[in-house]
Image (cartoon, rainbow, N blue to C red; front, side, top):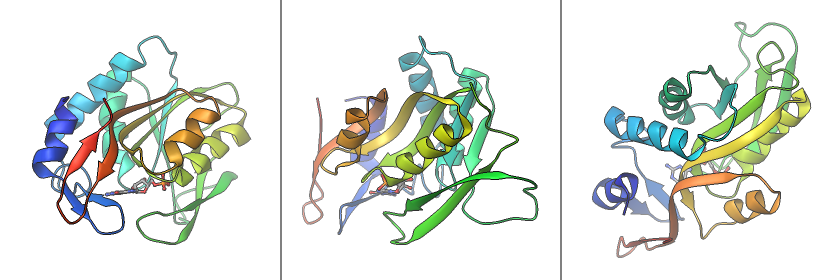
Length: 192
Ligand code: 5GP
């Protein structure tokens, strides 16, 4: 088991409805040493890939993507969910169904920060049904930029997102892939 898998076993909580709670180290309180390991691991796995920018989605992807960006030495851009007077000018917009909040979010990035030809590494904390990644890859497509790869901390392999994303031909690296988890016993099985 790698460090993230060990942490999930020791500190993760399996909830009803196929939800894994990791808010003691990833989604609420943040274990920065764990995040640093995740950032290093993404850098190691994507060491052969040219990356100009990291793209994630607010809110829980931001910390992870920021620490990873230190290892790649590139800027982080996060797709916003709420309109703000701080974002001027034209935007690329897409829609994302939220697995945890059970709603549809309009997400956007300013056209100032995503440009044609840029090589973009997409990073997020979880992959479940793949809706967040569909929205993010759509933003990259609209900009005429290129998805250099996709790095996910925790993929729930028993949900369909990973299969859909791999079938589209994206290079997807998930640091922990859960093949089974049981809300009643709390057991978690990782893909070897
Ligand atoms: P998807 O769009 O792939 O269905 O879900 C990915 C998004 O939903 C992630 O950005 C993550 O924030 C959230 N998410 C999905 N499943 C889980 C889960 O089991 N636990 C937590 N904490 N977040 C999840």
